Image (cartoon, rainbow, N blue to C red; front, side, top):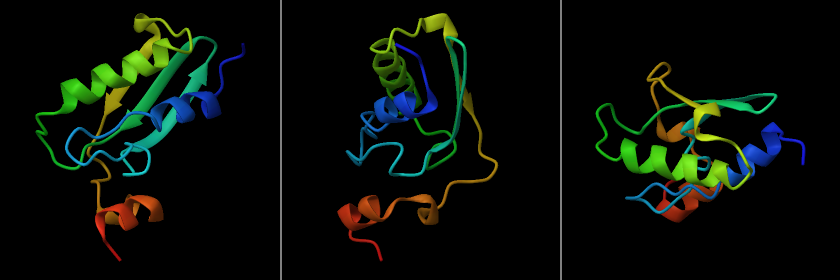
Length: 101
């Protein structure tokens, strides 16, 4: 099975924010995914700086990607706050689930 950005994104949609129970993709937390050979780099953010749930989200991302056969050492999660997250980054589905706009 050839690894692709699309396959990684499908798995990331399965990762739910522990508080909101909405996927990190629909929340707009995933800014970019780069797949090179068997390595995956995810650039993402959190809804707030210092979010105490990062370890849970990080662990869930790694568990989901392992299902694609990606080794732990080949998963890089680059956490950034530039640009800062905002509600505008959420999908229409996520906004509807939270009763926004």
